[in-house]
Length: 410
Image (tube, rainbow, N blue to C red; front, side, top):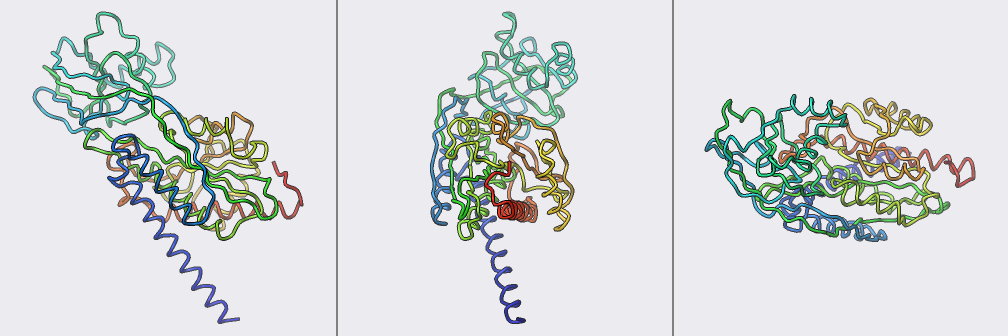
């Protein structure tokens, strides 16, 4: 018996070491210059897709791809912004607004409209908009004739690159407020972009259940990110190479030890551009949605050891209770329940009446949508904890299936 326990401990330690090595390998590739921010620049997203498919096939898992079409404002060259003769750094000091049209011009002070956060907040309140982001887009799209040839400058603490799914007819740049002097005499900006229709793919992996294959748990993570600004790229280590790496770890594990229910692993594209991949999937699922007992979405699970936020968790207390027991048993930090929101790939499932929860790690300091979201500053233990959390949940749901003798637990 003692010899058996020693052997079991060795096998567990070996499996844990292999899991850590794979997490490291996956994230370092997905956040590398080869994948170039997992956008369209340098075909980075296609390199990421190829890697994911290859890793799944090596594990012996069935893989399908699902094309997703959408329009994108694609950066062609490194943008420029020079204020009063001082050249700023793209991605750090400034970004062209993601909806900015091509522009190559020096603007005089009379041709510049500079708006800080307070000014945008006032406009937001006066127009009853939901966010400052909505105000920025409104000002670019609905400019008065007298402003058509002028430049919008939005000053903010940290410019954050967001979805690039439109192109509007007034140029706009977002600038670090600390770099804007009291007197802006001139601003030269250059933005070389092409707005066009693109096609990327969802990657769907399927592990059939060994006793109740008609019961399905979907586990998802988006693999796209913000791409790059010319020579500068956004690695997206936490957002969301971390979620993809955890998904791959789970897929490798269950390829060797299938549970009673079927597991569908969804590596979604187009999340950053408005949940394009997950909306496509819920319209054309590989298994009927009525068979899905839960959809778990992992997004930004690589930074922070305080626990997890559960978006949509308020709606499913029985399942949250299972996660709470797991959290307490393994000291995984706290669970913060948040109401459902269209902020990640869980949301389209909820519009179809499917139970879905979006998990993200809390307490981290990894920068968001920034060139410094790199693997070296991730909390690797957080990803190991996330793998454990999902494994334990699936184990508990498997026990429930066995106890009830029914494939319907939802």
